[in-house]
Length: 235
Image 1 (spheres, rainbow, N blue to C red):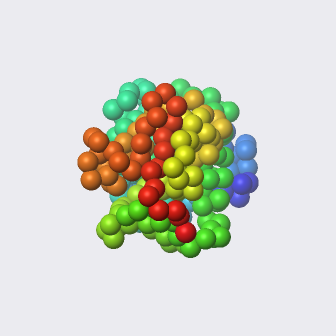
Image 2 (image 1 turned 90 degrees about the vertical axis):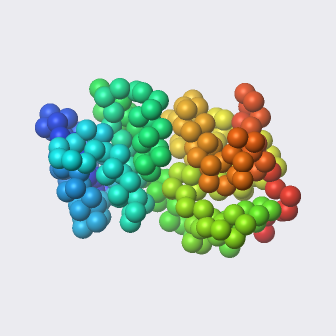
């Protein structure tokens, strides 16, 4: 963890200075830029381990566009910074491919906890799975390649979408509690953040369900959790 490199993309010098001090004091190497286009180039060239991305950036690109562009070629964990905890910003950030968000102002402990949780998840994802695939009716998950198909058609999922689906698929036909899913997919620090879970279930349904408004694959147990309905046992 101490060798991880973090790119900070923010056009507020005071914020960059504060975040840099916190991270370097914890053993991280820090890169920074105020420009969206430069942030994209630095992700490609420098290959940092994590990106902290402000919505407002200098130049013509905002954080949402930067996240979308980065997701075209990289699965780097992304934490989005927002000035206000607006649901529209949260959902737009998730839709662009961000993994987490922090509302300004935030504390050093919270920032470090989020960073460590994301880096740990990212490293666990690189472990080779013991089984080759999971089959759930028309849904197939290729574990080795982290590739998901529905009726033979490729479903393009973000890292977090894939992790959530994988967690549901490894416990087929079983209701998984909200807190259980949040802890397993996001980390114990997120066990009460139901907005995360609801948003990502919505995204998965859009990509996997023929009729997302009337889901047949990912079922809601109101007030309890979610279940992946499988007609066939996974292999």
